[in-house]
Length: 245
Image 1 (cartoon, rainbow, N blue to C red):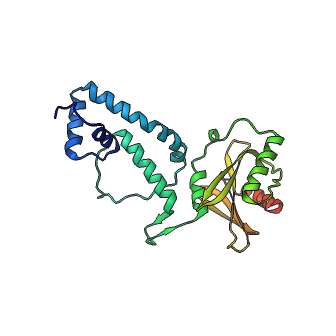
Image 2: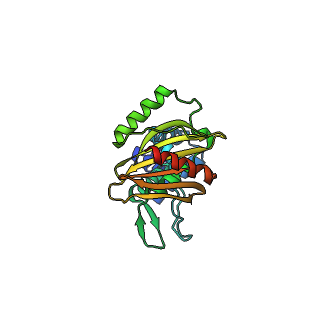
Image 3: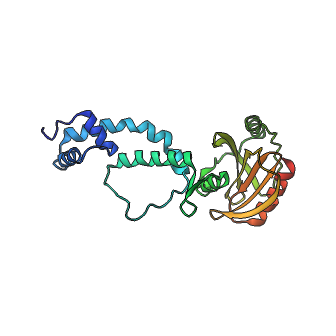
């Protein structure tokens, strides 16, 4: 078979990193020899991955840290598009099974760990520049509260400006994220999830993923306020949120 006589299946397998060593070597050699026909066909087939990359682009940025593989783990060179596909698959697996704890030898499911990993990726530019109007804020909170089954009469907390609200999820349960910005632009999030099996707890302060956090359980709901490095601000804000909710 000539270097340019590859089937679409072989070229697609090459892009996915699933081609046999023989086919992979011949395609690589054809590209090295400047075979425009092979290059053009790979580009056309690779374009099909575009929608997938766009759909998962945001998720890739939000992915929690994955465990480090042993240094002797087998490796095999792959084209860039195949690495993108592999990253997406790893992300889906990571969100699907929870966080692996090698020391415990088991899978842990801790919604606050996921929230902290997500929030650690936030920068001031992550939040929308335009502050929603009062009507927009009330409409968002009404919609999110309906999803959660909880009224969200958020207090005006000094130093925090409401930026947006969105519905996330954990283990098939809605998880609401209310995003705020400090006066310096630091992102802070109040996340709420239904936890009917958990007993009420007082506000507990901790540091997660390098961020100050306050967590509490009240009335069958779990709350986590997280962001920045100002513990006093997080504590005071958490007390105001807890009193209002």
